[in-house]
Amino acid sequence: MESSPEELAGLKYPFYVRKLDKRSRWGHKTDEIEERKRSVCKAIFDPAKTLFSLYQIHSDEDLKRVTIALNASRERLNDQVDYVAFKASEINFADINIIEESPGETDCVAANNLHVDVEGANGLRFLALCSAAIDANREAFRITRSNAKRMAEEMRNYGCLVFAEGTSCKCQQSSFGDMK
Ligand SMILES: [Zn+2]
Image (cartoon, rainbow, N blue to C red; front, side, top):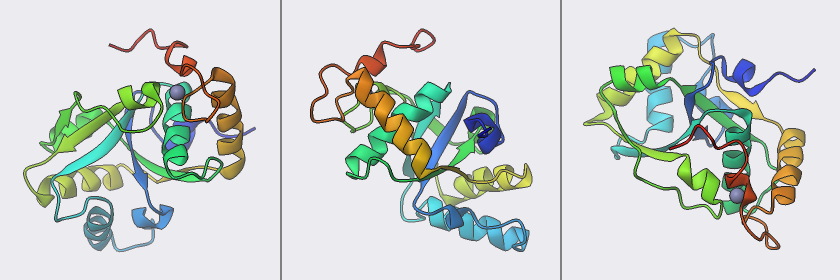
């Protein structure tokens, strides 16, 4: 049996995800912890910026939409995708604002609705966020190539607009009852 996304993320839904360029950006358990926090923070929250993209994930379906929409925008539909998950309470505690009215820019309407920006006054806010997650033994998690391939097939069947032949982003209509 494959692990569920919640098992992989080490958190129960709902949570927020930030996509990692590489899983190694999140460092490793054996790294010296304070050094790890600093290097992780620098790697995933560019110190020159204060505004970053996250996606809110309420279900496996949400994670599928976001993963395929992100892959489609890179024209690599079946590529593996690495994420780290944060709880809303960790983001709030770090004094980082969640800006919900900031739709994503993918071709999938459903994925765009899950996009938020987060804004912190300075890098220390993001260091606090990364520290909280690392202190909670959070690890990065991966959507494998075979999983991404299966997800892409399902999204294609929904008629998602990330596909050239997509007609309607029907993915927006399924199991979206809990969304605003
Ligand atoms: Zn779609």
